[in-house]
Amino acid sequence: YRDLAAFKAAMLPSEDAAARKAALEALSAPGLPFSLLAVEQLAYMALAQGDTDGAVALLRRIDEDANTTRGLRERVQTLMVALGAEMPDAATSKKRRLDLIVTLKVTFAALSLAFLAACGEQDVILPGD
Image 1 (cartoon, rainbow, N blue to C red):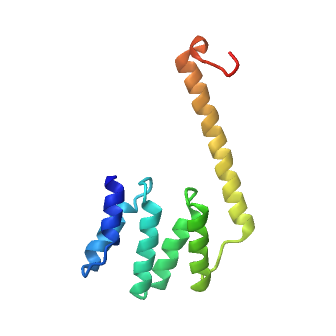
Image 2: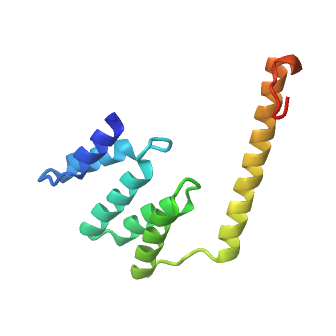
Image 3: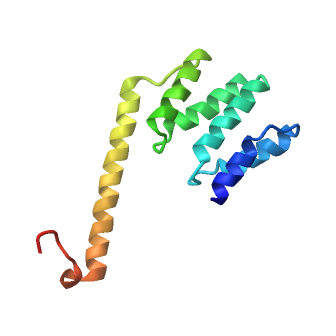
């Protein structure tokens, strides 16, 4: 709940743009629950300050993140198109997704083997046993 409260607090209207930006930057660290939404807000702040290139760079960061939800990705891509940003071609995006799938499969296989080795075969409960 702390992360949500911190994100909501950073969203409140404030006269101190620097403090709001600092709060959003702290929340935008990769791996934090609201990091992509914080990056989106930083992009809006950059646009409000006239920094279109900075906003597009932040939007691209969201678009390229594997954890971006479909709704957020569509919102970001729509804004990027409206700003005239060059979109990555479909082949590049598809290759990035395929690379991620392969990485996840390899990671899952390695974790499964490590789990089996740690538990020993007698401790593993398989479906149907």
